[in-house]
Length: 88
Image: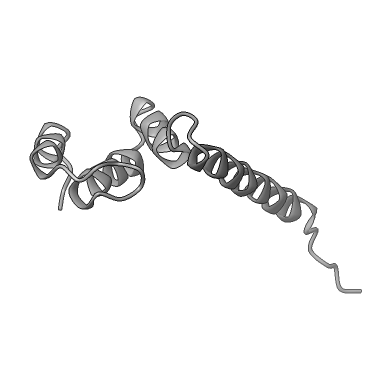
């Protein structure tokens, strides 16, 4: 008899990812209505505060190219990259 793998944990993880994406989309819609900070920018800043490498990288990209809720500021981007040892 062949045992089938238990996919319940995988489905649970997918449900959590789906819920997170939906919450970000909802926050993004509220942000576009004129309230508060961009949720993607808030997520990145929280990652930087927790010393997550991907947060530093995305914040540098946002500053350098003016994406992810950050205004483009090359000088500030260079300083951020240099101060935080981000490899480019």
